[in-house]
Image (cartoon, rainbow, N blue to C red; front, side, top):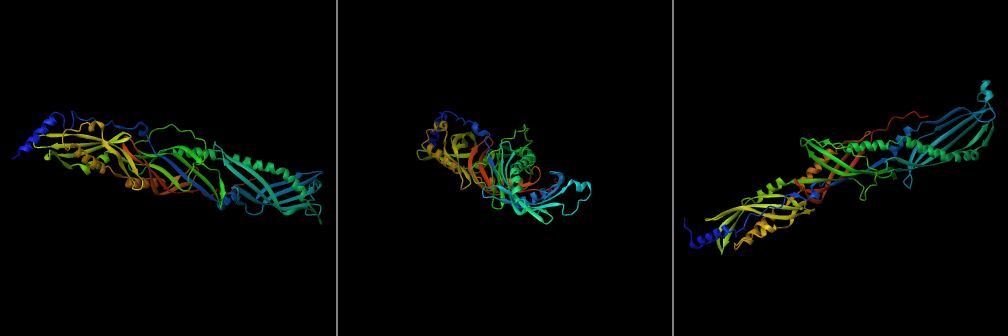
Length: 490
């Protein structure tokens, strides 16, 4: 093997410099500290699920229709004055109408027919009561209007304020034989006195039938219950709600509209889910500011550090650069692998190298750090402010082109620290759609969702992975159970 004098001299010079610690420094550089910043170790994206509930007035009317009996009141032999008795019947004469008012209130219109007969108690004792002219009759038609202003208290109780008024369709008249007397003014006076009591009775009945606190408590417990995932095996979906919000029911157009939802973290976990004490039901909150349409779900798309290290190593392992001294090639530096891990709020990159020449050899690790940067449009994460650690910079060495070689290594490494998240985002969309295809609701009904859009909103580091916060967007529907059969009411 032939070797020129200049080449041999250069090799001996490099060997001497290396043995004195001048090529890469006096020692091996220490790796940057491992571990994500404490504030970021348990970071998780907050999910805001908005579900606008829409109940058609026609559907609500059908349910109310079944709850309002045909006969609202029936009394016989009610004593009046001077031995006079009365039979009174109040019946619904047609369908109950549900209407919306401009102020968002719900109006119930109940058409009623009133029939009353008055007779003397002697007719009963003598068994002579019949359709004779001695029996006085009153027949009248009116519409009862019940305006409901609904709200929900912080304790999840339904609050209602009822306002009741009426309008005559046919004026009440007392018929006694051929005699007919208009009783409108007299009856109006009595009814006006009773309207406030009727309103309070409606409010009391609504409060007695209020099951909202029980249903919300069941929903809260159900949300916090871990759900097994069909894949991968042993995976669980964990929902950790922190807030439940719902707006007051309001009528808009031909529907009652309610915006409901939750804020919390949604994540997956391999292995048995942790045992957690039940969380107390939080007070009701107003919906957060923002667009209330559709469904928004915050999730994390993650790339484990191990797979990122393999990706970068596959791209750079085996690449070589010449080492020269005074214009003479003296050896070759080859990248043998890369390791990536979190160091505080930065990404640490260890570049393993092997330097060879005819008369010397060296192997070690160069350390660089950088800050993750999010490319929202390209759905990628790159690394900014990428440079060698201070300790590695101090090991500049005496090689005439050591800085140039280091810059070339840094440039090639930086170009390969570009991580697309498109596939991870698509996996999250598929997983979310699978889990939200049909979710049973307490007390019946199902929630179904379809997510079809995503936006990267941030990036953070954990000890296990490089993670991107993703907001998934789509639509949601709630299917309510069919109305219950009508109940007999007094």
